[in-house]
Length: 494
Image (cartoon, one colour):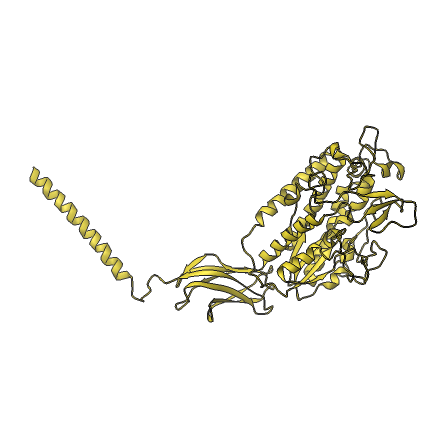
């Protein structure tokens, strides 16, 4: 457990640092993102698994569709808030191979270890929880015209649902143990952390080794594909919310036969917490290495875990099954012996609203044009900076007041779509409240912000040097006269 704790501490520190560093006051103005093409990629946490109503068209016709993609998932909310034109490719149960990698890229499969799933070595069409094969890889939605991409993936590659099933227990007394490990695998351990977190005794089941050797490279492969297929997009890698707390105890346990239960020991809840931090850490590292944005919900969900008074994560509602199928809104696990209600261990409506709020703010702040100074005088200089443009495109800079437009020159967007340009407000620039804007010559993307412009210091056009010299001369003469008077008075007194 010491190794897991170290990984957790390092990853958490990195996530916190990124959250602090990404805070910004910049943002697009209302309506400026309307119509931009947005593609959402990812798994059940992105698809809103468990939140009805479900889409009846994506990617299959039917209610619910095979992906259990909610009509109110966070990509839908982001699109509605910002006016984006969304193509929602998210699908519950998706792994990285279902999004897709760059053409020809393959990976080795991790060593077999029950109950962890085998992973595809390359691109693989998803077979959904309903047994349907999706018509295309998720990356098929990406193109040169894509302006916004959100992606959250990796939990199913790690085997999160299988891990949760293996950790279920009927009690937390000293004689109890994880039911699946004992009955199905014949492994007797006090907690599932002793199976999934022990690289010496059970090396093939060690989740941190699996993360490093198998999951993180596949996450990087997905991000490589996004960079290749959507080169003009701002990409937002969305981390997972906090499901279990770092300081869990057995007091959090509730029997699995009760609705919305938390059938895990405190030790296993803490272990799951450390595994989830490592997963978010891999997503964050991948985002940074690709120059993408990382959206963390870690701190904002810390008070709403499974063990909180107001959780943003659904507990487990299940029943033993003796029928060929499960009831509506339930899915079979453990070879159909148990039926689990849709949405177990996934965000509630409040949790999805939090993801939507954070992602909307991140997307909005990535597209902007602003002056480094809130107020600038005519004839003075300032820096104009912006983001959200196509890499390498020319950005036309302007100052506007009503129908009056002043050309401020051009800037060139860098590889991330950002620029900084020093400009001088020319004579004749409008004063008062004006707008500074930038428009991409290739993309047509245009963003703006308000700017206060004051008159030049020499508003009449006269040379200010002579008056200044005259004033300085008068000051010198006045000082000399005072000194001479004092000396005369001193002499007379003698």
